[in-house]
Image (cartoon, rainbow, N blue to C red; front, side, top):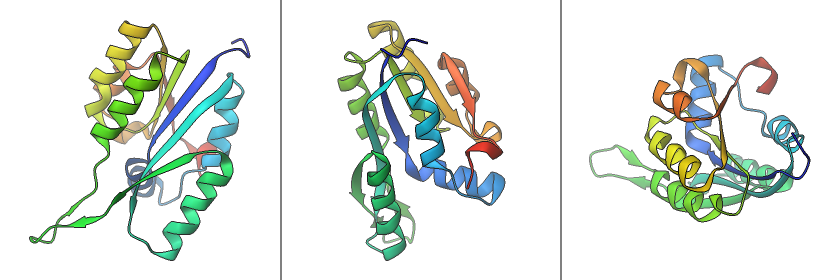
Length: 160
């Protein structure tokens, strides 16, 4: 890979949090992941999509992401009357990927959510960008793995 690759990173924070916790009972190492990706070129955009609950632990985590280099986008946490919660960034991520993909060489998505498979196929076909997914192998949709040009399994080396 040449160092001139322009890279955009998109992180589905909730998905990464729950899948690494479920599969490994550990947290994802965002700093190590950033270091891995930055070896492939210049990170020109890095967006992390999170839910805003306003608690201290979450604020510290968001500040840590900002310190690494991510722009953190927050959406309010919505508690429904039936007790379930809503906090879904899929449409927001899709819009940003579509906006940014035409200006980069590589789109890196951190998520195991199969809903993103059509998005990756579309930006790959329309903009000739290389698509890359980081996800927990057992908890990443096959359709997403197949849609990506490169699948990077989240294993021990990317955990805290």
